[in-house]
Image (cartoon, rainbow, N blue to C red; front, side, top):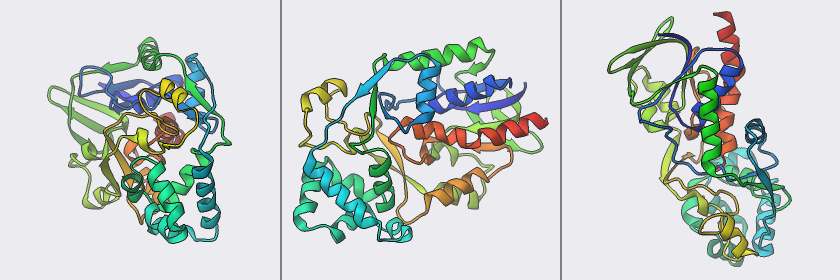
Length: 328
């Protein structure tokens, strides 16, 4: 088979990339190891007005959502605002070089620090593994009482099913039960499975870091770049679960069993950017690793706690892909 584009992984990013390319008139095939859609994340429910990629997708498929007001505990909120204001006097390099827990200990009183520690679930475990820069950006862009939030009211599978049906209706192919054994990168890309070799002009890899590193076509330097994230066993629903939040009952009703102010995700493993690296620089290097192979993975999203940033990993390279396909 000689396809314009092959996508490795029938997950949320894979479906999104396929739809964008089908809408441009390209031939698209998705190859998936498992026998069905394979994405264990459940971060589709809550989003905010800044999440334009996700909002556009929801509107495209007429998915129902409504405005949702999250009321924050004022004590915790004031401390976070204090942290943000103090961080403005510190260089990004320094903020990148230390984790958020260490940064908070250095600028807050013991009383203020203990409020954060006691009010935010797993504070020292989660925020010890993200940089101060990452956390502050998270609070400014995604955890902010002044931002409008929305909640998807349709069943979580409705969007996925509509995306799958759309791909089939536009003559896209999904090949299940097919594990990619090897990738041979020459003038064209040869995707080798157990029973067949697929040939493509463009390959989009939506796989996790651990799965990507299995491929032999990556050299040591490329693997070193991809190793700038680390996998943690984190239930992302606790990223900002404030024990003193108002309207606790309402939030619990909407967001399953706990208070999930930011991230209604059930995901056992999350990849976080290593403290001390500049994720903007690394993301750009990942984009430049190959001419016709693109890594669009949750592992390397700007913020793994919201689906919008997963979609962004593909949108960032979509124009490059279309330009290359138009030349073929």
